[in-house]
Length: 499
Image 1 (spheres, rainbow, N blue to C red):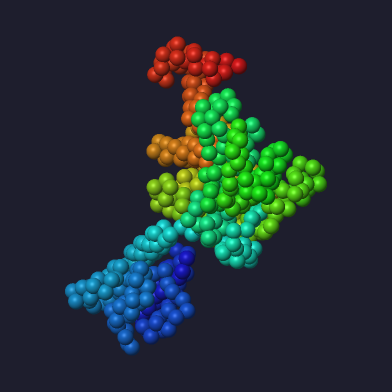
Image 2 (cartoon, rainbow, N blue to C red):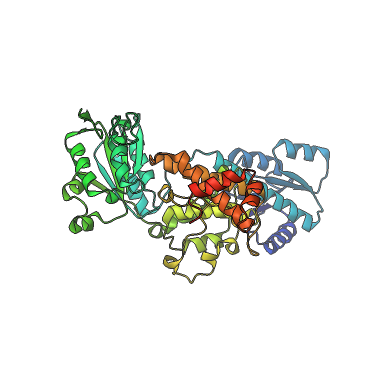
């Protein structure tokens, strides 16, 4: 936080306020004249300014106007020993935060300054929230190299391979490459080849004709057709089955493909961007990845650094994700202390940026106050020895990646004695946000029958929980759930809950 500026030609007033504010852990900078303040503004700025109204060399009202012209959102408290109406009106008309008559009670003055600081911080939060969300953030040299590469590729449609650990933001880079390319007006289609079963992946990529296999009741366009004229992002390409690699190579080589069950060749006008967290050279040597496909994809390679190699970005990313989480949950954004940020910067984040984002969701819900202190961080960060971050699991995930779509839906856990109890509205918001993200991950991955998949998980968990509550008594469980006993018996059989 920036310092409090005290402006008064009376040394005793400056001294009293300096000492009182220092006891409250505020940084303070003092000035004896308006001229000194205006000179200091060229190189620094305050969080709050407290200024006398009558000083030699320039009045506080004049100073208020000049400061407000440069820093419109700055709270300014005007002090005066002349408690007259004109002074008060002039101060408020000039945009003063508050009017403080002398002599003043020091604790009340400090409390007023504290309120001005809180208002200033809220204004900063609102300004940040109103700003457009950036595509990517990063001041570290490694990230600046990535940004430069995206800029150099902005007029190209060459194939790009993005490498980096899970959670490092490979899809964000792919979207940026698309957005800043000549194909920006075309579609961007993403598919995670590791998230789709092998027997469905071919149909997802290339589409299928009606009757091509059991259940193919209509013709379906694949991702290559959907991305026509735009960009196709193949995430986790290293997990693609070997036989499908051959079909992909053929598309990249001659620009033609067939739908599953089709006999008419289709043309592909698609830019391919691939990504992987694996070492493809090793997979080529092991015989699990085609060497010719590797060379076809590896035209331009971008390496995305893990978060532990760009620790200087953690503070900026943390503040950004706290803003984002607050916006999604419809609450005020939380602030974080420097001590807490230092603790985060010492952590290795094996889950990379995704883990940091999940942590910020956790803090938005679980931190007890609006200012996140080091003691509010999850136990995984508080109990570790410095430098032992690699062995520490990620904090509780309130947001799950699409790759984890096969996992069961999370249900609200029973709070422990040490955990803050969430109000029902907050718990409901988290649960629904998780459900929405899981559904989005499945839909974007092209997994079929998403409704049935999630409905089965939901029904199974509900019935399982009801049976636990009633200690296995089905009729009572059905009554509590509001369904018939025949329905619960049938569902238990359909969902395999008897096993």
